[in-house]
Length: 307
Ligand code: GZL
Image 1 (spheres, protein in one colour):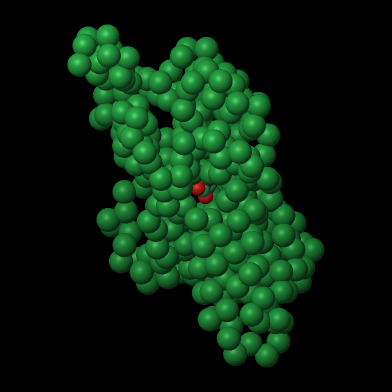
Image 2 (cartoon, rainbow, N blue to C red):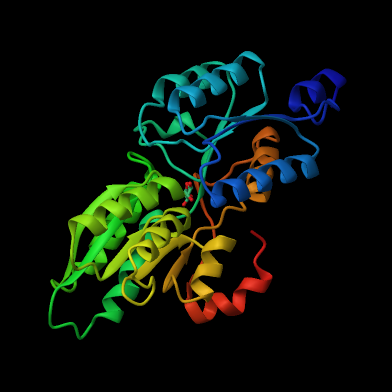
């Protein structure tokens, strides 16, 4: 093939480094820190020129970052949409500029799925179902109401919407399982503690906390202990992520069940970037592998956890 053909084939064929623009959500949780580390180390390993931005959990900052990557004419744009909606305009700008977009971690609710090449991330509804299934099993013989409070993730985000839906779907199996309060803790420890304090003030009997991530659960544990109650005993706790601090709390019996959400998406993202640049077909949806941990299982797994 002629030099000009190979030059037009792909940046790497022309000897140029593949450039990847990544617009990250923020640095709100242990999960996010591990996710950022995975993306940066995998991009370095792949020899890509990575441009990286932290949006401090604000959609307008992510949109600005995507626009700057379009201006810089990067080869591929990837991002984790902080919320599900409001992306069509900027995704159309990327499409018009001929820059492929890969979604990682969280999804968008765009009707037009030609606006992105693939979505690499967990099935958050399934994560919610796993949390709900465990609770239904724990209380299968309950003869009186079980009062559940829920700390939701960032309002409007795919993980918050889907973890709520999956959990509700499963606990509907037992009418005694009642969600008596549900409010966002924005995936952070500080907010999780603050909202749990308000739950404890407003409700005299709380049996279970379902937190959409470990950081909010850890904040809630501080509030529960400050109220003179024993987390994992007086109030059962279910959480999602399985980051080191969450798994440590689980191994101490303060969290009773953790649903894993794998943040190490870097390798799969870089493989997808290579394939897109090489013009290969890739599946519209790539689901990450992940499991669950009881307190006992967390104790066993903790020494081998990478994040
Ligand atoms: C889930 C991810 C969520 C984590 C939180 O894939 O988007 O955002 O569960 C993080 O810890 O803040």
